[in-house]
Image (cartoon, helix red, strand yellow):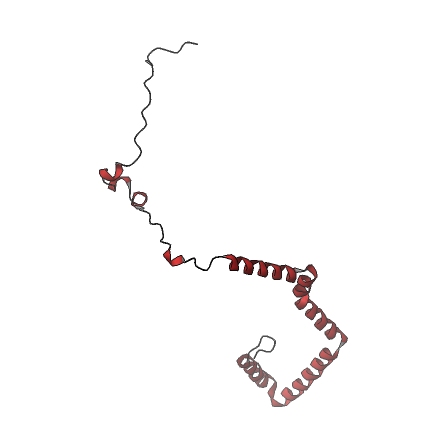
Length: 140
């Protein structure tokens, strides 16, 4: 139980400190004064206006959703997904599908640690065609 964000233990300490500071006689006067002022605030027209504005702000998202027709769109999406789910064959057994297993040793080991027979299946180096002698300077 929280009153204005103050728990019961905190409220107890506030009352205890007020009792120590004000004393028993002044504590009664302070309580009456606080009660009268709170009653005036709660029964005032300004307080009712603040409460109405607070309620409107709390209900604003729901009201905007209703005005925009999002409820209908949400219902349409639900019926469409239900139709799609019903169109999926029931005999489809996902347990029979085996996961694909990959050998990631080549990717996780450094090139020096891979055995030569494992490298045999790698792509052969590309040979470049022999060019004419490059000793002669180019003539344009």
